[in-house]
Amino acid sequence: MNISVFCGSSSPKNEAYAAAARELGRRIAEGGHTLLYGGSNLGLMGEVSGAALAGDGRVVGVIPTLFSEAVIRSQPVTELVRVSTMAERKEYLIAHSDAFVALPGGIGTLDEVSEVMVANQLQHLGKPMVLLNLDGFYDPFLVQLRVMHDAGFVRKGAETALHTVASVDELFRFLAADAAEIS
Image (cartoon, rainbow, N blue to C red; front, side, top):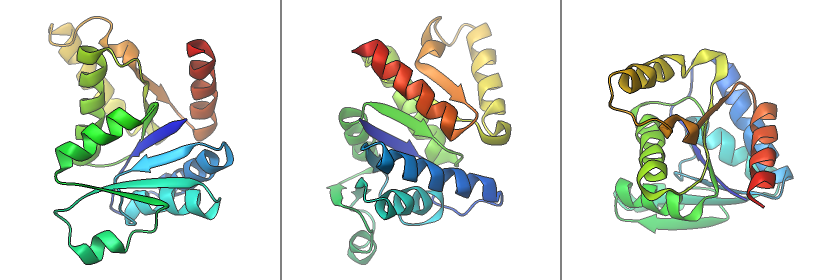
């Protein structure tokens, strides 16, 4: 399974987020899955990719050429995909992934989550978008989605393409059940 992970490229104040990122990377590698991500070795991105690489996992970094050549070449990955823009990065990840996981992150992470939700709604991808809701990090976002739904701006059924889990263990149980349901 190709799993895209969206997360912050900054170091979090909460060490539990970094620990979960490392556990996620390790479990992706142990399961024989491929990690696809934004290509950075900083913050949570570096934690998840570093753990996957340490476990001999396959790690595909997708990085826009707007970053300097030195930054691009410094990324430890098993495969580096260069794209022109951030939008192309999202398109690549959506096209090449079977599932999407969001660790805590910032505006870029919310942008990626929203992009997958829209693609699932408009293109009927049927690919799960899972929020790893550590310590309730995504609770305010989920409340906002309910507000938008209640106001008539989010279609009924759109929420079924978005899943929340509270731990990496729960995430892999969900992914295993989802994969079994598809096959």
